[in-house]
Image 1 (spheres, rainbow, N blue to C red):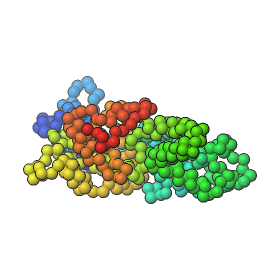
Image 2 (tube, one colour):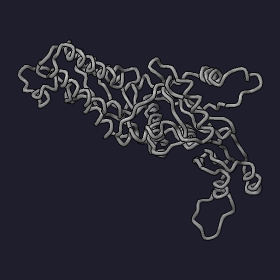
Image 3 (tube, rainbow, N blue to C red):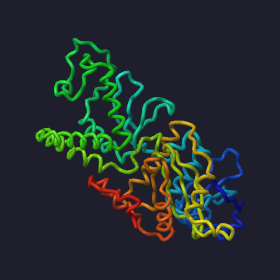
Image 4 (cartoon, rainbow, N blue to C red):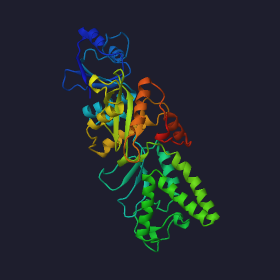
Length: 399
């Protein structure tokens, strides 16, 4: 991941300091000894940081100085804090495969897991991914475990899927639990329903999670209209009350919370190269390596629109594939850490219902990132974290 390399000796320190940029970067300090551990870190000012680490030793100071040990420097300039963190993660993962997790102190993203591999599926909140090719489905990332549990519990109040965590062995003599007493569970534990009925209820829950609540909103709206048409006004009022209870749960769901195997988005970050941005494609929770996109077309590409050039750049990227569930969890942790900040640099755009990126919105976002303007969705994320409802304006109605 580190693209630049310089040789270092104490006698040539000023030449090296002048050769490196006074800008953000991820860097590595290496020595000539094969057993020596390299020093890897990120900084907001590479020149100043190297002067502190490699400059002449000051008297009566305990500050770390590596002047006599370092013999070469590798670094990569970065344009944003997220890019610095991602490059640092990739570098540490390659150099310290056994200890990089402790060095980075990951806090894995909370997810809602739908246990479809269980004979009687249920939902739970977890920070761990199982087999990537398993049947279970994951939804997230959420800002915190509390937020994930609140969304899951509030949502399951509208369904009759089981809440218990036991391995069920249905027995008609089993007394059941409080949820079955309150008619909030189909009670497969004592054969209160057939396997087909329970499977149908699980399918309703999956459709709800897949559609981010839209399937149940449509179902309640249809029931209310049908009751009103048949003059069953009490039933219509009851359905309307359930609809009003469901609406804030769905509207407060962060845009980033998606079914993980369908999560597709493009992150735009500032670049250290003038008139350019850095792109990160996110696919199924896995973040691709950064790609620089220049907003100024070259001479042979001036006939193309920015949307076309952007699409060509994305089409040329290799498919992002993860090797393990742990790697996906780490990428989700990096994404969560950036996305749920109250103030953040850069923007992110998810795919539409058809799985296609909204190029028009992305091009406008690129312009804002280059100019350093406020992201259009930053206030939206803040409201979501605080629990306030928002409504997105359709793309065709945006200016």
